[in-house]
Amino acid sequence: MNNCIFCNIASGEMPSDIVYQDDKIVAFSDINPCSPVHVLVVPKEHVKSLDQVNDFALVSELMRCCVDLAKKLGLNEGYRVVVNTGVAGGQTVEHLHFHLLGGRNLAWPPG
Ligand code: 5GP
Ligand code: ZN
Image (cartoon, rainbow, N blue to C red; front, side):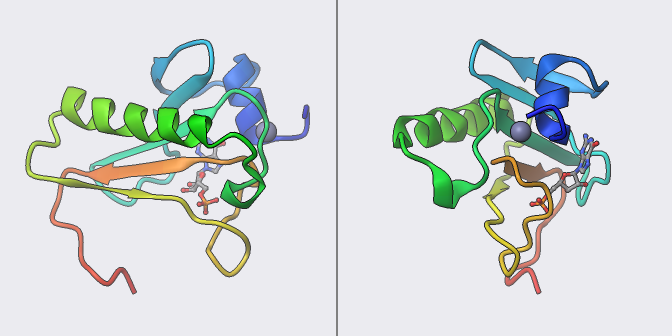
């Protein structure tokens, strides 16, 4: 998908602050962070949203990556993982991504 921002970040065509990558996943800093740590954990394969996932092993790998990164980034006091899904869910980029948020006390409910 060459018109997809996150595909372009995953391929390296578009620059980003990459904090982790392997053969299936890339994680990079959000361009408009909501918290001191705001990382997007993304499959390199184009999947439109959580709603379009066929193989939930991928979701497990993305979630595991969030947990590993939270440790690596020192989020010892806690963190939040968010997957906005669809228009009403607040999804603005149509490529599956997990938000890893932390580094401050996060309000709940989020509003
Ligand atoms: P969504 O609203 O779809 O759940 O989240 C999309 C996120 O992608 C937003 O937090 C937004 O700031 C981030 N974002 C959008 N475009 C770019 C970009 O070009 N680079 C990076 N690093 N983040 C982006
Ligand atoms: Zn994509």
